[in-house]
Length: 114
Image (tube, rainbow, N blue to C red):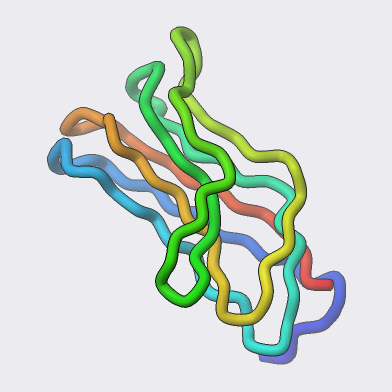
């Protein structure tokens, strides 16, 4: 597949927790030699409010967290709407650490190739 400027980077994952063990979600790596501007990331537990989440990126196996915290007493998600750049080989990551068994978690990432 030939990627060009303006092509969309998109990652979505839905997961129903089978245990309370923490879960890391990793999107597809940016193609080598390419750059993506991530414009929106969110992780959402649609079952229960105030869960603990992190959003960031993976570079060579090391996670870099750009935003971390609880969704809030009446909130279901943690979102990052500040654009950031991913280079070839890097990937967006999200983390859920306080979900309950059977909670339904969704991750959405949107960006554009520069």
